[in-house]
Length: 147
Image (cartoon, rainbow, N blue to C red):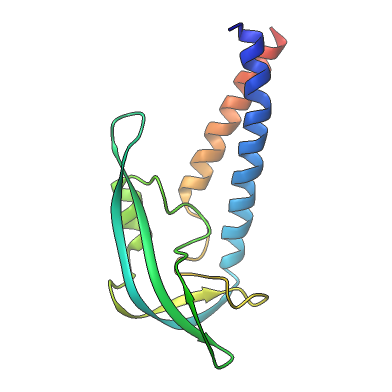
């Protein structure tokens, strides 16, 4: 496969990945302004998903919790609007820090849609790392197209 063709494949793939990650960043940053409400954690667990390209183990954080808004009870499994899959052990530990395995905690609820809630508000650093990688791939793709 020619470098020129590889460049033509990398550019749209990178632009798609960038749009995906920028949307995740927008959603994650929006949660910082959401309403903080008491919730009850039924379970939260970190499980190994396999290994990445480097051979390092990757983890997924899963949760189940309930909360009340306007007298109505809701249930959610969303940990954050950022990444909660394909995490390193340290990233998974950082994501779950401060969240009890069971019992009382707080959730952040979307004021426009009370069914939408997360346990961890704000953007995590993995989104910025993904964006940096995608910008690098986009640059490489443009370079290969131009040569």
